[in-house]
Length: 362
Ligand code: CO
Ligand code: ZN
Image: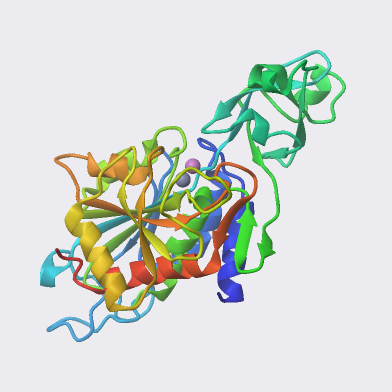
């Protein structure tokens, strides 16, 4: 993996953006995407929608728009549908799991609710950060048995000694996310919010590397996936795509005494067959498999028995949209130390680039 890609993943994973408070990460992604697409906008829910028109070499009567960029001569304007191109919606969610302040006591300790799938035992010893940079640590009441650890008996300590002092930094309804720097471990990368900033990184790299493509591509960085696939639902309705592909993490079955699951770290891009939110369109899934085989890209088939992703919402939009998922295998999901393999990430980028450069037919 190039250092540039690793730095991209570092910047994305370290950015702040629990569900509903995605402003900071959205600003970052917008700045990364602008040089590579024709248009960038934010919709009513906060999804970031980046549009890239079809780019073809030597289109009869039109400009050869292989290097079309805003402001450059030959910016592509080809309509999707002409010459077999499709309207393709790609989705990766910007939001991450976190907590939200529900009560501040007289001593300045914060009680909180959860945003997405946060678990009490995964919070012990961890730190969170708020949008304004305020850092807090998790603490808990005296417990007779570690099994009694529940969020109701936990609090966040931001170093304040009174309610008034706490309220100078944090208000009811403010959200916080885990804070952790990205680390390298051999060929693996460990960070908080790999779910799903690694998907965002894949989309940014695809926008950077994509050559000629007959398709009109919408790179959508969605909000509120972790609380119910909400951003993807409205974005897909608004865009009415011909095909939808989500990029998200999936679990693995390759650690000691793990739940049985075929996916392993280091065995390539995972092409989803099914999860709890959707059964992927079989034609699209086979088309992705054929693309991987044709270009020698390592891949594995994924069945995730619990959990879902944006494709589940996109598939059920309007009269239905053929939907699929390319997943990045990830260990320790929904902890502050989510681990992915660099080779798997590269395989996901390459697979999506090749799929978009081809006819995307089945
Ligand atoms: Co998640
Ligand atoms: Zn996710």
